[in-house]
Image (tube, rainbow, N blue to C red; front, side, top):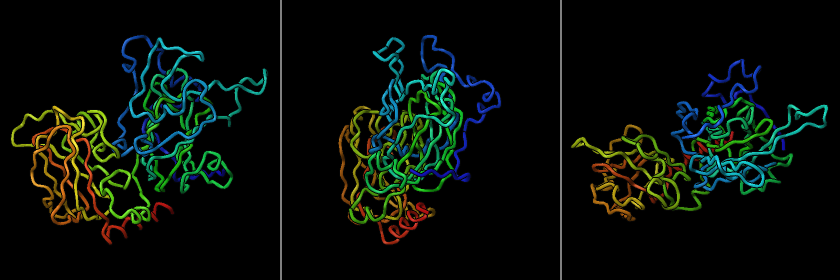
Length: 393
């Protein structure tokens, strides 16, 4: 394994306020207070992180996984990518100690009694396979419930390797890793956010904690960059799927859940695994959500699924599309009644060539999934290829 630090691609903390000089003097400056009972999230620390609107490239639902770690003595590495927020049970202990909902390593020790602390370069690590390769715009290292046992610093390295490499293959000297987040202080029991400025396409990450400790969750927000050769081999694809580079742009309401979930793979398994807005009380208005395709595509069929939405599905929907940023919105599906907890399929009379679509919900209500079946146009395929090649440079 080779390692390269590029100063132009370092991550920048969105929580600079706690990266103060006192942290260098007091290693416990970023500790949280001990749990005192009641709601464990009452004193959880977070801040506004704009990049979290982007898809989580490390979402387990996209196929991401924590494929190796050097140590997971207290808590398993797989907890890092659990979609739900970390839970805390103050009464739960096991044979190895307190059971934590995250990845937690044992306490590192020095070489001997005269050197009880680990050497400065020693650290723990975990290898993460992204579910969808892409450009990373921000990382959240969540230390929820790790109040005095979180790492003093974290760093992240990234690489791009085709296929499905094993952990052993990723750790060979032939693989070049790029540091996208140099060692940075984190707070205990907090959402620690870092903006990433690298514009390259990555497939795997190496999360390091210096020197040891626990991390509850890892979120890797960015933009999917699919392989155009793979999409061409498939032929007909879901043009709006997150896995193929579709992304959410804007919505009238996202009170209960993110509209990005509409374009996730698979079928919704719970009511909150889709897009649900609040109850609309203003007459002659409606809710909507807008998406961008990976590139210009020709849509031939549409699926609208209201799985698990039984008393709160949208009453009616309509679908419009446009070609280009300034194109006119054209009707793809007219206003149509929906049934709750049902998959609806629409075959279009003529293909719709679009780069954007807007799903309207009347007057409000939820949609679990949407699929746009079709193919990239020649123009769209060429654009996607250019984007893919730029992300490899």
